[in-house]
Amino acid sequence: MASITKYSLGIASSTGKTIVVVPKDTPLPVQRSLIVTTVEDDQSNIGLVVVLGERPQAEENFQLSRIKLDDIKLCPKGEVEVRLVFRGFVNGLWAVGVQYREGIPEQQLSIIPSAGLSRAELEKVQEKAAQYLEDNKPTEEAVPATEEVIPLPAI
Image 1 (spheres, rainbow, N blue to C red):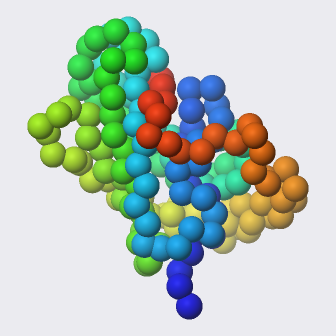
Image 2: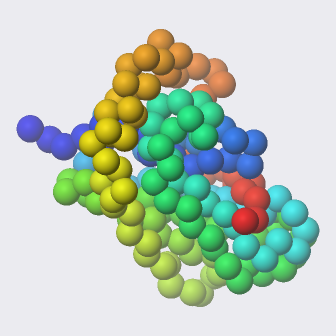
């Protein structure tokens, strides 16, 4: 039997919405990418919040990781583009590759979904998903990950 993702993996947008990078039930291994950018002029960092769950509002999902990308080139908002590459492995581990300056190799960050996620918290994620099953069906408001540039704030 092939491994699949049990929950959607995404990031929080600057408006608080969940941007789904890897949808629930995606076969593993998988690799998906998207591009993010700055929302302010001369923004020196980008805050990336990685979430797990099916809710449209990022704060209603389980926060897996909070990543701060420093040393962003100072320039007008939207000019800097950072490529994020999410890789999911059959063993349940995730890696996020980050490349935000051309010519600089991609940096790898590992995310272990079970780290800090107690059995009670996992059950809470499952209960919320079941409780809001109808609400979690894709709608026209769902924000799928694309190669479009997504603005993210500094932290």
